[in-house]
Length: 167
Image: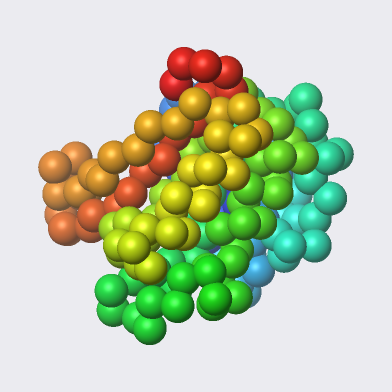
């Protein structure tokens, strides 16, 4: 499985997927420390930088999956909860733009559970509607890391989509 990772951070997904033989094709990260780590750990995978400035159409037909967890501050119950009014919240729409341009068979997006209740769920509904309009069948769940052998309580919403009628 070949994938593009947006909002890559330290790229925990790639560490988890490496034993499966999954191959990262490109990252998109802007924070200095994660960028340095990506360059050292994955020297042959380009970091395209700011997700909002990338022409994703160059990756159309080259990857199976687009994965990303757009910044959570706009949705977190610990924050101001400005949702899509917050520039960080609108980065969710950059995820959609990347998916629209790349058009992979699979999409995977994650975020904090606050995204479900922020503005009565409008942001999450917008994300689902936009991805459905791109042709994806979608399913989502809230999972907690403590139930997957991780020594912390870390609840996250995971949205998975498959191109076509059945997710």
